[in-house]
Image (cartoon, rainbow, N blue to C red; front, top):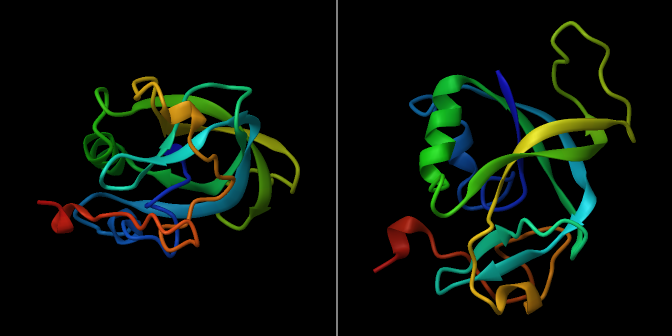
Amino acid sequence: MTHVFVYGTLKKGQPNYYRMFDSANGKTEFLASACTTQKYPLVIANKYNIPFLLNIPGQGRRVQGEIYKVDDQMLKFLDAFEGVPTMYQRTLVELEVKDWVGDAGGEKKPAAGSKVEAFVYSTTTYEPEWPSLPNYESYDSYGDHGLQYVTREGRD
């Protein structure tokens, strides 16, 4: 099982959350809410209003998200869904635990404030203006930014 940190449309309450729990994609378990220990630019970009975490450590904000434990089948699904390696890359990131509620696999549950690592889907390939777009600490497709995510089914 692999730990994955999601910060965008795969989070609870967001347009692609259902994909995390579609058994045809694999197995998933919610573990914790967390935020990155380093700052990263989280921007909403392109004509589909996709959230992108730009792999520029030290810029932007500490990004809020959720840690999930996924099996190999779900990891393969997520890699394909996120367009690895062309659109996103899967890289390790250090996170600060906010609230660990999931199973710790027989080990002591990490306390709030402790550091853990998980994979994140970030991008090093982006348009030159993206780093200067508004940065978000927490993504919400339905937020007051007015940039609602366009689902794959809604694209022309």
